[in-house]
Image (cartoon, rainbow, N blue to C red; front, side, top):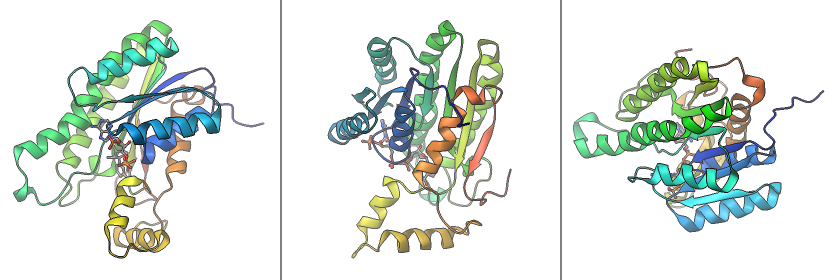
Length: 264
Ligand SMILES: NC(=O)c1ccc[n+]([C@@H]2O[C@H](COP(=O)([O-])OP(=O)(O)OC[C@H]3O[C@@H](n4cnc5c(N)ncnc54)[C@H](OP(=O)(O)O)[C@@H]3O)[C@@H](O)[C@H]2O)c1
């Protein structure tokens, strides 16, 4: 018998769903029958993604062009989704980008920008989504972070710090919301194909073929499984964690990294 995820009719909010991992998760949840709301700053890219997902799955997708760090943006996003779909079951805090480099060369503004996106915007989305989930008798919150949260490497700040905060948020809120049957988990990403890497590939002159580019990346990173991850593989894990089949899992942070992180 196939694994029935029980996502049909659920409503999922995904921050940063126009490209990369967010888009793959939106497509996967939509294919499972969930109504999905996605946001991103670039409106054209966002609307194109929403239209393509809708066309592929036949399930409505709401596109909200906004910068999730802006004041009131999270409130507008949550309210628009609830108004359009009538409920809210799943929140995936995904919007983000890698921020690292030599600590000496960084200033307060760089750190503030990283925390605004990865910590404050995520916390705000959770605070706004929870009352809807609580009213419905439960929900799922999934925080997309990275493995530096558990095992910081040189030049991984400020991301390692903001992602560690994401793990603290995950664990503390898993305890706090358990009584409301709102489950809070995290996925710690290693290296997964997405637009942020595609942009780096295309910036090279001439751009190397994707297979070569990602093979070199996997070799440089020393990934035990010998390759970088696929966005669709990440979407499979995310779909399971926010599904009815994961009803006894809360407060965990799963590495999705081909075995690279030294910490379980
Ligand atoms: N891919 C990896 O190997 C990897 C590794 C570790 C962690 N992660 C984490 O996984 C998440 C997804 O990354 P990705 O690789 O899929 O990146 P991506 O391909 O660059 O996609 C990022 C998405 O987030 C949106 N976004 C970024 N900033 C935003 C903002 N302020 N407000 C609203 N939307 C915003 C982008 O659209 P706009 O630019 O139009 O806003 C885009 O839709 C991030 O949190 C990232 O840090 C990824």
